[in-house]
Length: 566
Ligand code: 6R9
Image (tube, rainbow, N blue to C red; front, side, top):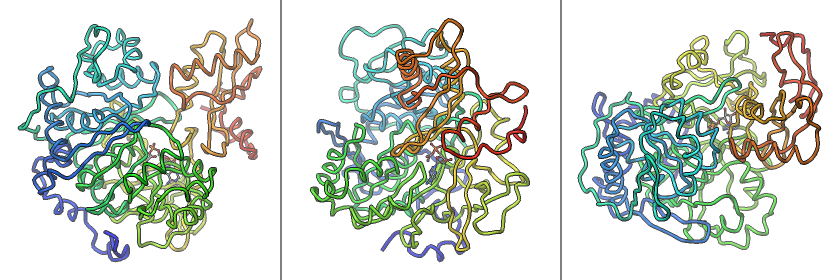
């Protein structure tokens, strides 16, 4: 029996207070995610239960109980206080998937700080933009990433401490401090900062079409939706062994790679390494993973290897599979039935929504290719892109719109209220994704309504890529668009017009690709550069990415005279 039971029964009289009651939270009282994920689980008699089983690619392993989480997050919280960090300050986590990342996240929240996770593969420019925007006061990092921080430090006057979690080796430099979790004095008792529902908790940066990435600001009350969606969608139950593929540099990795499972007192396994079919299957086999939250790109990679490889492993422990981040194609659902005897349940949400909003819950019949239906408590519809009125006709494409007000919804974009407000129209939060609804109330994803590139489930902003391209001495102007890719759905393609005196050739293409990889990240690196004489523009000089994108996708360019000329 699944946790949610009947979807239709749950819709009746649904109220988020149900989650508040289960968590023992009363309005107006303190609520702290760090405490809920560790101390509270210990108080429930689960102190000795395993919380985290960590492994790296080569099989090195560490295990932490919920009591370890409690004590070690206290230890980190106390160390941050000793460094003089104050509640409300932004503290960045810039690390691979090491235990310090997960426990540090709880520690930051416990002392009242705002956790700002950033993907460890980010290069110096990606890092600088986000740390500068948030005026971040401290950053946790590893030796292998500290050089990137050093490079930009002069431009970050607010950054007071660089906390290196593996400090052995050459001497640390200015503003750097070593911190070894396994040698730090264990802090048994810590007074958790009395954060309340609306106290900021997590700042996750996400890319849009225009301008630099924006920090979606969440609050401690988000726990209410994250706890309940983890329980009802991921169906986490006491004896489960849960595995989430997402890196906490992205929202799935925090909402469902930290908060969801641990606030439910569930044991999870973390693999600090990228995709590798055999490594992944052997992890499932070894730890007897029961619930798996993955993503379409990974599923497509597994499909490529075929069911033969899957059959070489004992994957019989798996009982529930979910997916997020990109459209889950019908073939992937059908294939998972064949390979694992289970189907992937799609879930749709965004950095901004903080928790799953449209999904297939366990008892719901899956229509392969559909994202499912709204989670109880979420009012979702499809609106007309011009009037923002709900479209009543089944199968007509419009924008996914959500009625604001669920607990995990972002509260603003950091230091960018105007853009936040522009997301609301006619009483709805407009997601920026296009979809249609069928007569049974299932949502069918169509595509994004903006120029953001979704590569392997990671959003990359064209503006950030174009700005970085312009820093290359040979580049006069550029446009970045998504081009179709069998595995990653989209990859970045850049169109580049060169400055006089530069000739297009293969070496220059490689040089520019590497330039972007180093500055931004491997995700943002163009997989192809097309050198052009000039770029299509509106009369006012704005580059028409849509024309280039249509060309890549073999779609009709449409009436370009209707393109906004602003
Ligand atoms: C959680 C997360 C959000 C964007 C979103 C949409 C795409 C996410 C999807 C999906 C089709 C799904 N997206 N889930 N598209 N089907 N089930 O991924 O957050 O990184 O902010 O990305 O990803 O375009 O708007 P985020």
